Length: 248
Length: 225
Image (tube, rainbow over all chains, first blue to last red; front, side, top):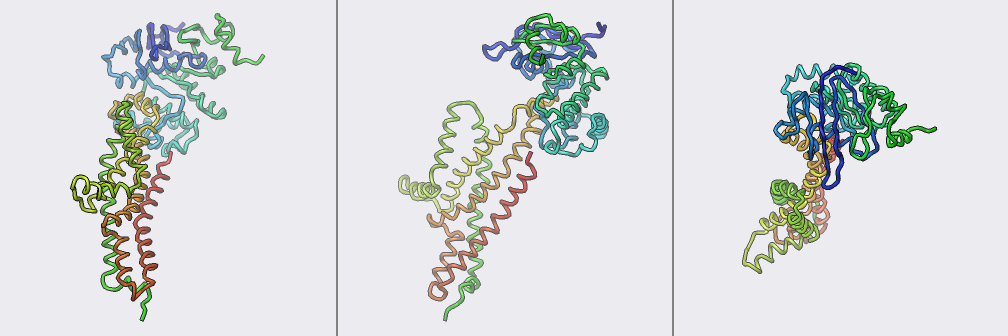
């Protein structure tokens, strides 16, 4: 096990929509440099969990700490916390009225008040890293789904976040574009980025993760290293879920 | 001896009179559009609220103005107010009131549509970057709303310019009325003038409306996403 420091700590998180409980009692610790993959049937609350972590959804109980700082007490300014938490969504939501470069620069210029010159240089470097240097001037409508999603990733990365949240970011993509996006994430993982990934790509989960969390009906059912989880799931629910993806 | 109808156009100040009539048309339309935009934006924002009372009231207003023919509204304001309350409004003022009532309703509906068509994810993506609510509106929501709003708002302007031809019926002398006067005045000397005069009026309307609707189409294309 890694001896890294705790980056994100979720304690007894409860979340409900009205009377409907979505997350029942989630406790989860993510260490620096760790890649955690969350899987589970749709509607199990995994996307909601990510949205709670950066305050897009209010929570009804429990607490979340980032770098040992309590971020869910209502006193912390989310706009400051969110700079440290990068998030990429399923439906590639670039801002359609801005070019790819302007999309990426919005955060550094408006939120972090960095200089245009420095931010542009940083952005160009990131565009190059994901192989989109020639697309900086393109509008989102001129990009493919995979390209848009890569721009969305660097839009989050340029803020120099300490942790990245990925919410099923390949789910809406055509199959041949999934790979290019997953490759970017693999490179990030190798570079030591801390990530929480919600995905349905089981092979990818196996390859990228340090730990797999299986959530069902709003609670963590299993938490194990990928090898153990995919070969010997401990619970009946996890076995049933994994069976959906095999064709034996 | 008979003149060719077209010559009527160049007798005296006839052509200038037609242009003067066109100016009245444009004045009524543009003043109404201007006020409609100013009033329509807050109305549209009100219409996105969930409050059932506001929803019902704005709905009734919108449907009433839409279902009523503009001509009936013009008569109601011009003749109706005078009869019922002894309020004597000039034809032009009545026209501006009616077209503003109509334009505000249409504009409000356009603003409402533009606002609710921005997906929630746009707000979330902005928030996830750490933008404040004000920054989200300033950089993400308002620019997109405007882009969706401007083309249909321009189309509304052309519709309004054309519909002002109704104000003839409450005695406003605009381009169509001037044309009729010229035709009447030359009935015996140039019986074929009608065709020519109406053709010129057609061209005048076209010259005014075509660039506007082209502009709308160009903006729509440029901002399509």
